[in-house]
Image (cartoon, each protein chain N blue to C red):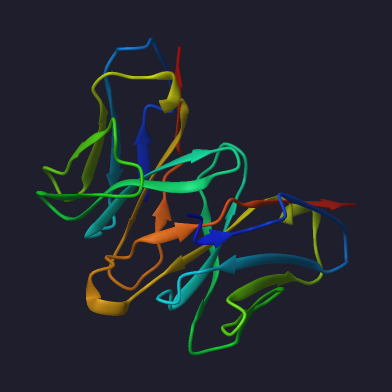
Length: 111
Length: 116
């Protein structure tokens, strides 16, 4: 039982490049979330999903897209990376009325 | 508009003493609150929670107090241990309307350092 895993752990991008961050959970959770953590800002919700095939915008969705083709996976895409997207990205999952379980994070540096 | 605020970026305490971390919120729709703990290079892990129908919840060395009228909650750690040194995030959620889907609003975090 691995819980929530994230791939990759660290990535360096050049401005304008694209990439996809993968989140996987093996707890059969319905809800999944993508957050970004920046100094002094806490964790801010980017996008979330309440089930396979459904996604919704969070607090800071601009510049990101998501997909949830399978219940266990939640992908976060950056189509054209910008230095402002340099951050640590966390994925989380949960069931209704339970606490969220977080992955270990992906550190992204955009030059 | 920061709906959940942790106004102390850092806190330093001696081992064995009490650590008190504070959190304020503005949204009256929040009806449950959580504290998460985060070590460097790891994801946040759940520590303790409290429903708005309670004013106190205790779990071992950790106690969370909720003052709804002041829109304030605090986390007490007694006694503090060096292994408690981490970033602590306060978070709030709402079950109202059935459409919150477990979404949480987080504070900025407080770095706790417990000195031996």
